[in-house]
Length: 429
Image 1 (cartoon, helix red, strand yellow):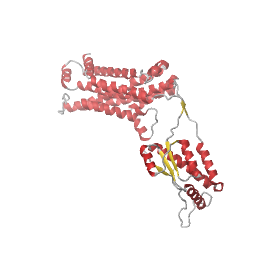
Image 2 (cartoon, rainbow, N blue to C red):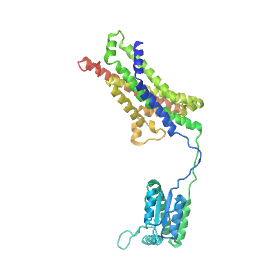
Image 3 (tube, rainbow, N blue to C red):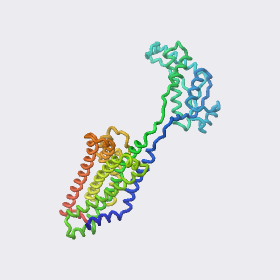
Image 4 (cartoon, rainbow, N blue to C red):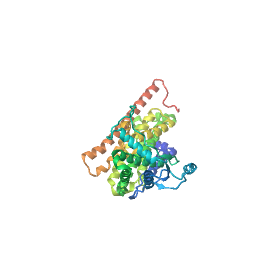
């Protein structure tokens, strides 16, 4: 077992790799769960009411109704009537939205609606004027003052325009009823609202979801950590003094490969124990799931252990391709991020469609996520639930077998190159 112990010592002598790829990336997952999976408290939703300033220079029935509408949906603030006052209010952010209703606005508004009704023939058609162009007359605009609160300003501007459109529609639909009836109808429609509230989810459901998201995310640190550590370990036995000693030692190649594989399995189990242990933090919900639904915890942990075989095979493949330390680090970092994004680890709970969904099926992390999602359904065992859980695990093993096969082919080709006079395998490049 000398090769096995030497391989593990080579891993332990790289503490920075352990800390960065497994330690820190695993802790980042816990922090992500703590920040994004907080449970909102139950209660009413408090609407946001932006500050609103209205300068009414028309003092008409329409302008007063529009001012009431803005006041009901915002917080009215008093501002001056002069242009300099408006500029100061906008610059100082005293109001998120300032509406200036010019003198004669109601008369122009009613006249435009009447002309549009006449041009359409009173039946809602398009109609044309005497010149042959469409006779629709544009409604007069309310002057607005832009402020730094652009989002709230746009929101209030949409509310004001929606109210005016309702009034215009009332005038076009029933011009004989007059402006007063159109205003009342617009106010009734604008006052309609759906009651909203926040319903708190049960603690057990929240913990199960949080735990599932974390165990899906755990594939990311496992991909980066296990890939780099096992790749460097295998690489160390292919170059330099260690390779020359093994060639001189009476150890069959098969036994060397077996002991290296056993050392790689130890790295996989160690990484799996670390990420699974981190799930017991309250932020990840693992402890609550372990005490309340131990079978779900065990199945998710088992799925994560199966996934660890994939980066083990990828590390072996990278070493057989001749990657050095820098290349293996880049391979593990970029490969882990690519699998995480394409497989949906960072968007767990959000359904992907289109090209992203099609590409994701060709990543092992996609199937790991499916296996984790299927674990709650195995509390009631059926053929469908077993297939939903075991099928993705089988796909992960197929990915591992494919990566390992590519590594074997690459190693064989490099050995043939060396035997035919090409680059030597024991170079320290």
